[in-house]
Length: 206
View 1 (cartoon, helix red, strand yellow):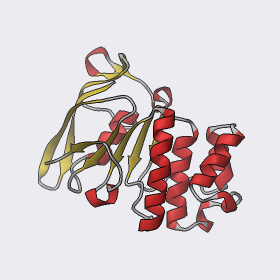
View 2 (view 1 turned 90 degrees about the horizontal axis):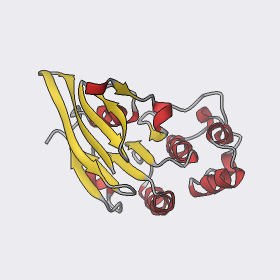
View 3 (view 1 turned 45 degrees about the vertical axis):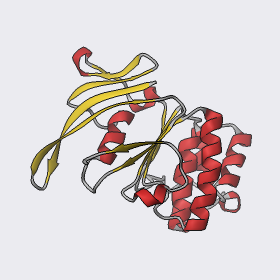
View 4 (view 1 turned 180 degrees about the vertical axis):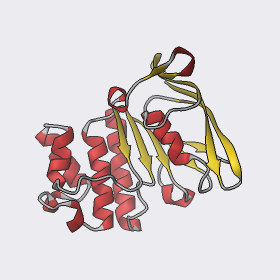
């Protein structure tokens, strides 16, 4: 069980607004996170990951505190061992597709399996600037999965994919999530983009 009960002040065009999230995420579940632009969806993911610090509250997983403002506990992103798919992909420009995955794991069999699922087996020696937007996005997803995370955070992970590729990838990914027992939080500004993904719902800024 992942327990989140946090607050964070956000600067908005109409002044300061408070992002407040209180929710429990069941281990192995998938949660689709939606809400209007600027509501704090990405900020929420980054707080769970340890990239942004909440103002107050707690984040716990399996009774281990990742963040506890009252106890001054704040584990680093590395200590949380989370897979994160960034909205802008955050790929390394000088690394090939294969090197991105090898940076995360030395399990060759797992790397090859991910490359097959992502449709990138023929692009292992390509660097990001020689990949299409959709290929870069798939690489970002595969890199996040390479560490076999128990918690996977995905920020607009399918926005650059056509419908056919997205549908096939989602089907394969849901099988991987179940196999890994990964709790998965997926952000999208477009709820229809997540059609085909069964799971819980969390609307931010409603």
